[in-house]
Amino acid sequence: MQAGIVMFPGTNRERDMALALQRATGRKPAMLWHRDTELPAGTDLVVLPGGFSYGDYLRCGAMAAQSPIMRAIHDFAGRGGHVLGVCNGFQMLVEAGLLPGALLRNASLRFLSMDCHLRVERTDTAYTCRFQRGQVFRSTMAHGDGNYFADAATLDRLEGEGLVALRYATASGEVTEAANRNGSARNIAGILSPNLRVLGLMPHPENQVDPLIDGTDGLPLFEGLAEALAAA
Image 1 (cartoon, rainbow, N blue to C red):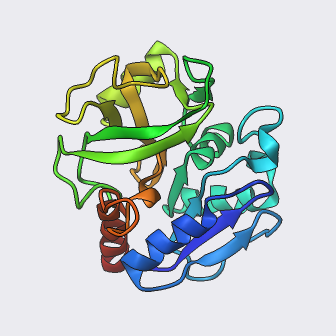
Image 2 (cartoon, rainbow, N blue to C red; image 1 turned 90 degrees about the vertical axis):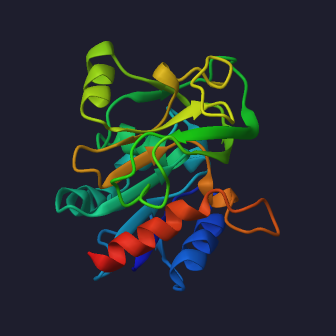
Image 3 (cartoon, rainbow, N blue to C red; image 1 turned 135 degrees about the horizontal axis):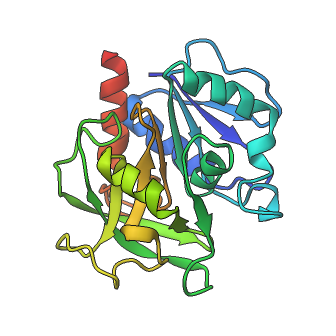
């Protein structure tokens, strides 16, 4: 699997993402720049990592969504390519129209930097195939604008089409208001595109890929990607 990680002015999680992908695949991902106009030949996965692109001016991810490389990513996704957006990357995906909804200020109006638990809602995707349905894993949230919002019709469509990939839950898997620290609609932490190839999520699974640093709860996401895309 050949992955590419896109860097924007203000990106700060590209190294963590690169380490997670290299641990899962054995290959160093390509580091791409926001002014690039095309993706390297043979790219299987594009990752939009976390950070504060363009200082989060205007709206988080709004300026990055207009970068030259996003045109190539639109085309790549349109051809069925896999695109992963984490935190600021999720914000870019919704601003670019690759996923529906919006990421608003956290309900507390405070930046949240803490552990959370995510419940896996489906496992027939490249991103979740190493998990069990209903499995809960620990991840890390670090955002000020992670409150997922969409109108009722869009939320019903996401639910009806099974496009909610991950929800905030308790450690035992209960979907509760207390577990939903940023106030996201229906406890949504991550959503998929209709073809299941584009995933946006707010927490950082790349934080949990090394037993010597913070455990390996997030590693199955990257191992599953490597396995699924190698077999494609």
